[in-house]
Amino acid sequence: MFSSISWPQLLIVLVIVLAIFGTKRFRTLGSDLGNAVKGFKSAMSDAEEAKEQLSDATKDADFDSTPAEETRKDNA
Image (cartoon, rainbow, N blue to C red; front, side):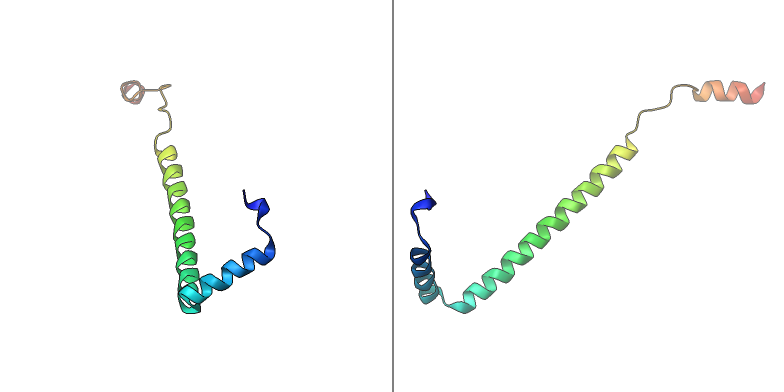
């Protein structure tokens, strides 16, 4: 689809877009996009940490010795 678009055509489109919106809006768009990517990465790392904490908290129970058996061992 985009293989038929050449570099000069992309340059003309860029010049037209700059003329319509101006450079100030593109600077703010770039910083907003950067902040969004940074926020997304921090949310993903927070989700990974929460996932690890949940997996640590939900480990399988140890059924080798139950509390009742432990009290019998302590009383014996």
